[in-house]
Length: 365
Ligand SMILES: C[S@@+](CC[C@H](N)C(=O)[O-])C[C@H]1O[C@@H](n2cnc3c(N)ncnc32)[C@H](O)[C@@H]1O
Image (tube, rainbow, N blue to C red; front, side, top):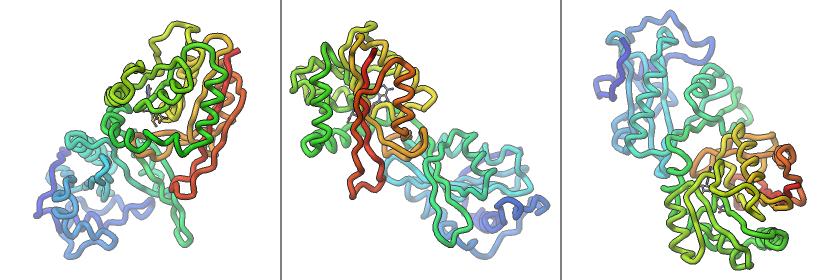
């Protein structure tokens, strides 16, 4: 029988023995006896296992062990990073007990406790020389968000993230900090102001700013004389937008199902709001934008660009996706929105992510 429980000090020796068992690919030996004798020293590379209590539990994290018929056969923990996310570490399953649900039981309980602790996401790394570990995490809903290879490494690290909350809840938590950070951002962005100015010039009729966040861009367009309202999935964002710009209209809503009649709008603005939509769902969102636009209406859509058609990346608030501009322009075209212009901004030198910022202006035929 598989049971999962919190680490106890008396587990330490066996935990060290489990950590010391080779576990990568062919090195994992399924004939090792299940009862492990306690080791006398911490396995190399795992200094935090010297003091599980201090390294995991005392910092608001968790460390669990799995028992199979009374023997300790699995372990793993998480440590919060202070940003609502926690790193999953030291996940190990005894090689003789693989494919018996040990890893799944461990991860399910870690995730349940992370949710109970109010965490928004779990992240971890594994390596490309452990394809079975990558497949395991992917089956649990972790999304690969990047890789790292360094000279001298015979492996490539693969980074994974799993969101524990919806995008709306994630932005509810982030809303005050986001508003503070971005409220005045247009002041220092002449290129953003330029494309918003062009958009304001070409739109005729009402505009929806979908995924408007704290409403600063909605207000900028209103200042240019555009009849504009904001929609966002996050009630906290909408609360802040209403507070900051009380004369404008802001509504909680989903951009996948806008509360707007067919062909009612002259424009749709979507700045970095489709980035959190899983790529297979994006065509339906674009079709929704087209539905609400009048013939000749314009869409201005902003996103961060990557070299693959689409690719997950590690966004600070919620998992997000980069888009290759031509690929997204192709999807727009397929749903009747023809590209008119695009603005491609190189990343700021100081930006650690180094993604280009792209804004496509498209017109409904
Ligand atoms: C990166 S922020 C961008 C905010 C704003 N457009 C700007 O330019 O600063 C993404 C916003 O999109 C919202 N959002 C994400 N998915 C959404 C959806 N399906 N429907 C409505 N809003 C969504 C989030 O709540 C968040 O406020």
